Image (cartoon, rainbow, N blue to C red; front, side):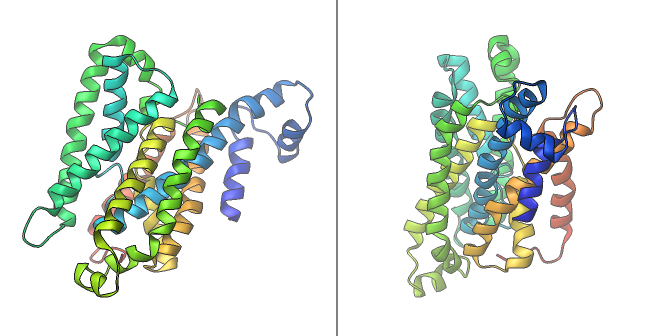
Amino acid sequence: MLVLVLAVLLSLMVGAKALSPDTVLSALFDADGSDVQAIVRDSRLPRTVVGLVVGPALGVCGALIQAFTRNPLADPGILGVNAGATFAVTIGVGLLGIRGPLVYVWFALAGALVVTLVVYLIGATGPRGPSAGRMTLAGVAIGAVLSGVTSIVMLKNMEVFSTLRFWGLGSLGGRDEGAVAIIAPFLAVGLLISFLIARPLNAIALGDDLGRTLGAGLVRTRVWAVVGVTVLAGGATALAGPIAFIGLMVPHAVRWFTGPDQRWIIVYSALVAPSMLLLSDVIGRVVLPSGELQVSIVTAVVGAPILVLLARRKKVSGL
């Protein structure tokens, strides 16, 4: 919790113009119409709020998808869920001319749902049931194909490219309060679903046979897990664009000090993920003197070595 508070303060203080904590508090609560107040209220506060909304969704979505697939290297990015949501939004903008977050979210949810189901069905095909390896390979392949098609559509249609070029990079900036108000309820529902199915996910992690013995409704739990992943990944992508590796890194970091209990993993992921997302956004603001890096680029740069490290470990953090 202290790390999250620190991340929020840094998000409000750090940028092209560094501000002290006193100045930030004054700008938030004293309406003096100054330039500093405009910087804090109109630029930094909205992107901080977006981070606080999107961060828990990405972290919990990663924990959820790792638990129900029993794949410690799964996250919405690696399994192609983000790519599916991005592809659906791009097709909606390019072919149907949709505009605005209220419409984006429905296309993002549909794309996330279809890819989640396809990846899971491919991974579950076989005599031994769901395979983490098959799911990962299917997700990477499908994500690569959809990302390629998305790029082709954007490059062939400059109007689509102009509309989605900043959104498609994955960023916390440029999102207004209206977009947050539209999408936040979807993410709240996804988080609620995740908390409610945490206990049966513990049973599923022990294997299907033992899970049935413990009374876990396997089909029901997996259906709700798919719904939760769809809502969280689709809603977060609709609001901030595709942001990778948060859903992979955070559950592993949390699992190191909580153990395999999904109830604690989900709770702590909802706190650690926004901290990491906001800190990555802060790094993106200061790393380039002439501008800023999109937060998705920072999380990818940080997350890629961690993914290699996890893949090289003899024993990945247990689920």
